[in-house]
Length: 219
View 1 (cartoon, rainbow, N blue to C red):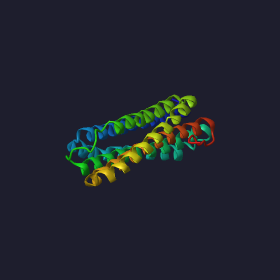
View 2 (cartoon, rainbow, N blue to C red; view 1 turned 180 degrees about the vertical axis):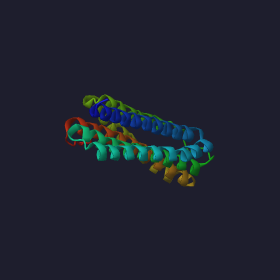
View 3 (cartoon, rainbow, N blue to C red; view 1 turned 30 degrees about the vertical axis):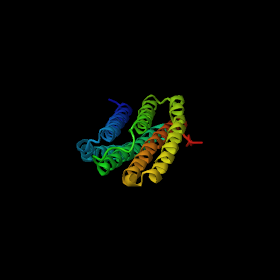
View 4 (tube, helix red, strand yellow; view 1 turned 90 degrees about the horizontal axis):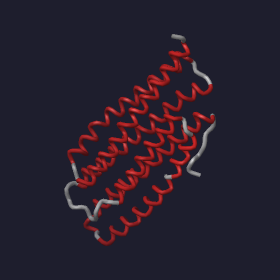
């Protein structure tokens, strides 16, 4: 096998590691929201425990990427592929941290009945998680057009985040006895909003990979 073919195989392996990390992170976010809806403390604790695997996989991706740079001295788009792999794995690891943060808020809320039905947060979380999944699909396919469409959904998440935060602030004055829970729900809303932000980052990394320059898709 030629050196070029071997290197291409290593790049493909690196991409598959990122997609696997993405699957783990998507699962963690989904389980954290399920834990919130069902006030499932055991599930929340498991999410925190499993985060070590996500961190380990990010480290493995970084190590592999650095080794490729050291051994192959890639240039142009090949170098960008390796750099983007490092950047995307970092964003995914942070999404995993956000799932942990949601799980910690679930634990802090505990078994006390929710101040209101938990319906809107899961809906927005589902959209944010889908954005991450779709941004990874755009990365896998190197589809710039799709990446731009995914990033535009961030406005919808931001709008919902602002609306929910305002609603929770109003509830603080109406039901001060729930201030602890409301604070944790506000944190969860912020974590969900940040999941969408990391999805946009992934889309931006793809544009850098394909176009060779940086874009701000939040403009």
